[in-house]
Amino acid sequence: MLKFLSKNLFWVLQLLGWGVLSFFFAYVANLNEKPVGLILFTVGNMIVFISVTSVLRWFLKKFVPIEGFNTFSVIKIVIAVTVTAILFPTIAYYFGFLVGKLTKLLMEDSTGLFKKPPKDVHGIGKYLVYFVIVTGWTTFYYIIKLLRQSNDQRLNRLRLKDQVKQEQLNTLKGHLNPQFIFSSLNNIKGLMLEDVTRSRAMLTTLSEMLRYSLTKNNINAVGLYEELEVAKSYIAILEIEGRDRLKVSYLIAPETLQLQIPPMLLTNLMELATRYGVLNTKEGGVIELSTDINNDSLKIEVVHNTKALISKQRQVLENTLRQRLKLLYGSNASYIASYEIDKNTLTVLLPINSIKTTIE
Image 1 (cartoon, one colour):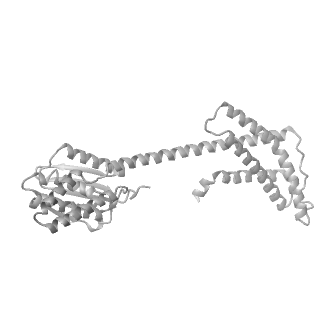
Image 2 (cartoon, rainbow, N blue to C red; image 1 turned 30 degrees about the horizontal axis):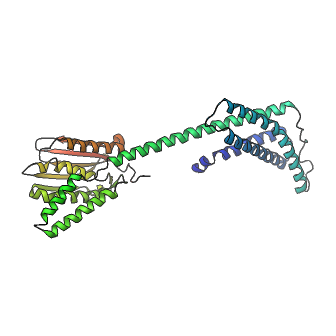
Image 3 (cartoon, rainbow, N blue to C red; image 1 turned 180 degrees about the horizontal axis):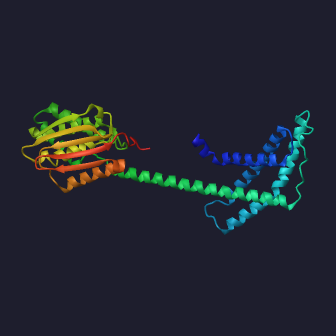
């Protein structure tokens, strides 16, 4: 309903405005004692008002557009309003005459339908009244145009802002690290000399991860259960390089599996815990990935028991992660990294179901 009113605002206001004014004229004129006469007078005036102002609107829209408005535009408006005000009473008079004739033809007994005959068009007072009415209508018309233009500009700015935001998100997407792809292919190549069946399985896993990364490019949120499978695939490929140095456990709350999170988020966290953590030590370590619901927020936590490698690449990845969360959730999400000697914790807090899953 609101969409219809917004799309047809001009005609809705035309009907309401002229309808009320026409009824007022009919009531004040006291032309009849019968409801039929009041209705005829009201409808007749409405038709005249709407027809004349529609023609005036066409003229203003075509010859006096709001864009490029100047002094000459004001002169054209004054001339158009004056001409309309002069023609208005004449048109109303003859239209009323036509309505009277049609009434006599269509109604068996039209005697006494109107108490007073319609007045002639003479007298400057009548023209002044119509001039005021047309001037008021023209002013209101341009006010509505300005409001619509301002609203359209605001919507365009919002659309542009959303487009810029989405472009930023696409730039910050958590795609697979090219270094990871390169090293994974080398590791799989070495694995072929030991276990052909497993190397084929790892190639399939890597291709599925690449497909996932590419297909989620235009999506801002996926189910946590999907992300969990990709994170496990990521760890499976790293285990080729890490051998027995990498041990991972998963403590996933069942109620969190269907919740929405940004694509590649878990993989990014696992990359921080492995590339810049466990795999940088000869002994290796243990990683624990857990999820839970905490105060209407989804809490994702990755803990590993080795020293974190603080490097420029790690800082770039963490800053990218923070920017993605800010663009998607504003201040409602956070990423916190806590570094200790034998315990490093990466925590992400996300509001539940608060981002759009696809680009519109």
